[in-house]
Image (tube, rainbow, N blue to C red; front, side, top):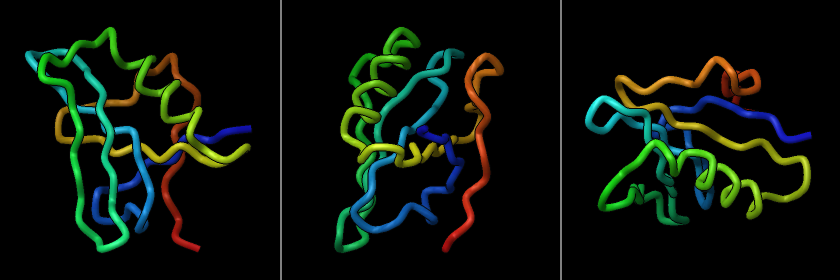
Length: 94
């Protein structure tokens, strides 16, 4: 079963994607953060962020994960993990 793991942008492993949660106009919104193989971080967010995109972005990311892989989550300042969502664990580097 997929787990949800909180990481900082600096902890995001090379070549991995993470759910990026941020606040725009007082609303929780979602995008994607990717660390390329060369270490560069790419922040991909919609031109017009909307809280309605949150579940869609999560589903798209989960569809790209290997079976039972954890979904990494980066919370920008002010962002939060909704209480109705499954438990968000802390990242522990192996």
